[in-house]
Length: 294
Image (cartoon, rainbow, N blue to C red; front, side, top):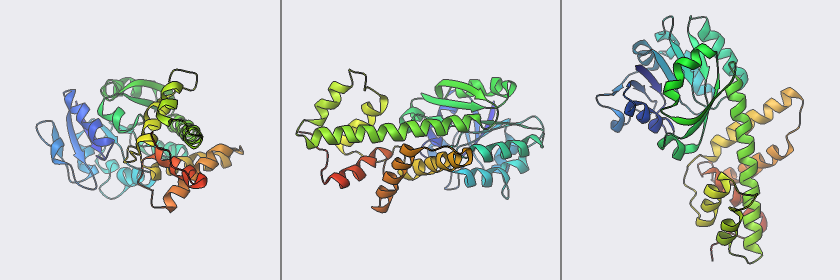
């Protein structure tokens, strides 16, 4: 199948590579230039999203934020200009559910299908083709793109119609942020109390407190490995979607707001590009104590 792929950053690059490993030809575009290691027999560099769309049956976007998706789809030389009836646009970025519905309506008017399919699993999941993919769209469109999703992920769920995939991703990011905060507090408490946080983490991994975040991000906190990963500034963007959505729905998300303030504190100290596990640094500043392995 001829697939278009727009956005070849930390996540998009390995996702595109996994599609090529699956035998598909990819037409590629990235604002920062197409990396040479994805160009070859199966990877063809294009000059614009329009050129990508013109040559492809299914076009995937994987870019940082809502304005970037809008620009890629509807800007000058964007995807929309290269579409013809029957093609499918798949946005795998994490963006606003409300604007996703608007984008879908605009693509539908061009007699094309739109699927929102944000992912969870980070760079490791992208490289290992083990992403969780949360999908919004019609059952017919989902059936067509699911074989592609299976080359990039393992847990693939059609949540509902357009926008529901993005709503699910926002919910995911709430849980991830709050769990990072909880793991950070627990390991900070253990370290300040004089226990070895590495051994505490090992013990907790066998109990009810066990989680993927305790496993992966707990280790990052202890070993001080805060290279992304998933950047704090991207998680801030996702929590902004959660908090603005909560205001629109007239609900309160108090602990989500707390986590956003901790991310804001990290950003104020130059940490926008730190891995989101580095939220613990804000807690450490409050405690005047740094987690350290004995």
